[in-house]
Image (cartoon, rainbow, N blue to C red; front, side, top):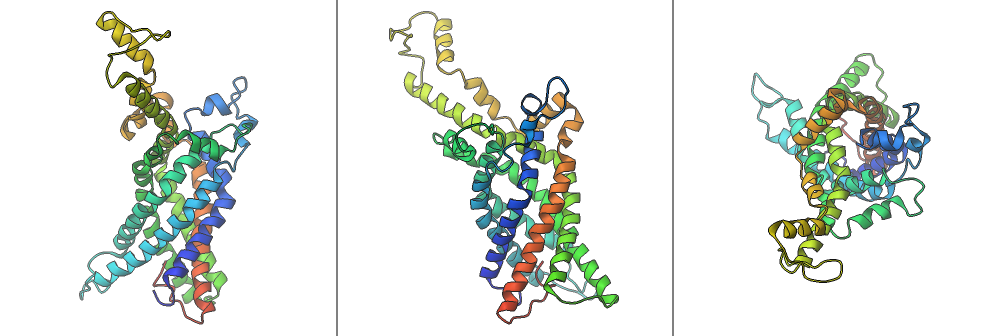
Length: 358
């Protein structure tokens, strides 16, 4: 990685993430609301069956938590990706028939980006859970949406990581598809401009080539992985429910000593009777048990429920919006990152080899 230090990668990644969050966050909020199971109830006018104004209010709700988490997660992603890609490239043996190595370059890029995504998701998951639940809070609420959402996890903060598998399950195929296409597209554009004598070597050229390549590749990957994104949204939106349910179940169990003995009625008197009476009393002490079990549903089960409710088209809700959002977001994200790392290296008087990184 000629000319680039770890600090360059971290700073460039953080600036890129911050830029994208500010500009495309409203589109992400709209996507979350459209994919929500409560979309028809909260955001559609019952009489006209058209979106109501509520859908477009509070589009920046939850932004704070994302900014705090995406700065380190983006830095972690790019640092892992750059070093892993560089390592795999060095270890890839070349032969006379395979001068570029036995393992195809797209596979190296896909593997490196997938490993980087696993690291990034571990940092980003809590913020993603808070963000998506904050996006669903009524904009008329007097309390800040992020604070209101965080308060619901106070009794069970580990629930913030419940969406890790879902987030990684969406992002892994997305990055595995996007980065090989992105790298190849960028290479082709540079080759084309080189043959035509159009290469200028400017910061602007580096930025727009990266932005166009990333946006196009990201759009294709986003549309293909939309069903996984819809399921991920459902899982993360249920995390608040799960946190509350488990807290209530824990409190109920504590109150009953983990059994049905010692149950009391509304007046504090001992409850005696048949097994059915005891079971009924226990059920009343833990009314959220069934909801808690419901929150444990697998991603496959949630996908089946979506198909049962909305048909196969339900798995593609928000796909077009996600494609537009990803084109803009990925283009700005990687374009800003590329420009940032080149700028930082050039400011020190060092030369960047554009083929070595991204």
